Image 1 (cartoon, rainbow, N blue to C red):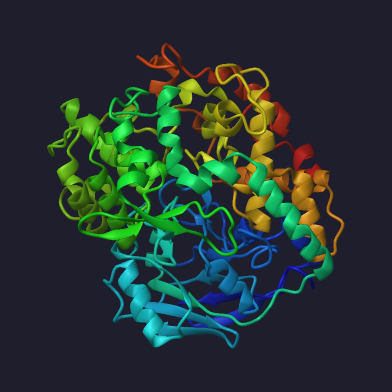
Image 2: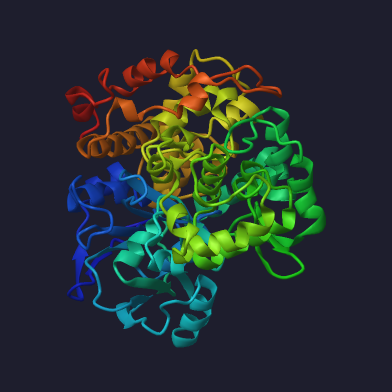
Length: 589
């Protein structure tokens, strides 16, 4: 077998029992790995009635057929049901964890049950060992990594939860390789519910490649594609994702004070340029990555990695904060304690508006930079106001009778692009299977960055087709698994060429797109059976009814009704958004 290692282990933490999960070659071809195979396995193990934090819920870690082979291939996906949204959910992370896991001879592992006491998994070429982690419980993620490495093997990769995951905060993250994160959807809370503190991996094996000579000849071509693309070859290499701050602000899309506006007057002071000028120490890269979009930074007090664009926004413009030191240090603390920065910052922003409207009992004002670090700590430990904020914005706003003030879709907070100025991105948010996520169909590419071509960002015509296409491509890329940034530089035909070189199979462009559609539709089917309906494919009323007050997107609202029916038709779903029997048959679901 080429590309895949051919082995997945299921561990029941309640009993300690391990078993090999057999995967048919036909299933492997239809779902690949990562997100796709994870969703397929999850829907076979768990019903739509399985509660996210119960012992019966499954937590699946998977690599893909290109992991540890191609550039940017150190990634892995974690698949489960989200405690934040109740949707089926996958969360991806970079670093070296995915490559090390695959080198142990595994494509991945599945965790069910709940250990009686805290444990961690030690995965090597010799198999999976369940070890006691009581002495690590309570440590932050960086302390956990250092302590576990002393107990295992130098050079190992560690994925762990911090106090946020231990306390089952609904948006707790899994942190790996110090500052890399499977951040969205609360996968860290699922780990915590199982008393699983960490997973440490170290392998020495190699991935079998069908045609090593063709791979050697292909890699320079891939480097050229990356280098000649202005996003992967220039912008991300020069400044990382933070380059987007001034770009989005100039387009009137930079959400300010809980999306009450799209222009932040202090954007320049918290921009990527200022971060590079005053805080960046050096570049950092994931496994075999020539882009190196990560940035190691320093303040007067601490150092770490980031903040990325989304985090600069979440603790900056979203809260009316213009203190770059406070934003950077809040980011460090989120990484240490294991919290998703997007949901964390957005929930604080929701609380600030609730306070502004006179319905929140804790004093939180726009621009309260000096409170950020303590707020993050209080959330992770569920102390005082942190207990309220640990609910996420949807539950918080509902509790105080103002649900419309939560900027979320299906319970997941919307990131740093105001949808009123990008109609395609608005449709992507509304129809995303895991909730308010920007990366499952990054319409900012064609609508703002001109990648692969410029589309009229205010137009609705044709957007349903492009959103569905990008959702399918992204599902496929999440399953092979490579970094999403490669989508800027290459087409499905290049991904097919990669797969065929490594696996020796004859994937076509059309087959890969069908695989993506199959994965997306299976996720949708699960969510429908879990109780989600057309009414959940929407946006907060603010975006549908309130015009942006200023900037280059002034006087715009989202015209969702002009796109949604067309989107359902393209997807092969009925008028209520339910996949038809014909579609399920066509996709062999």
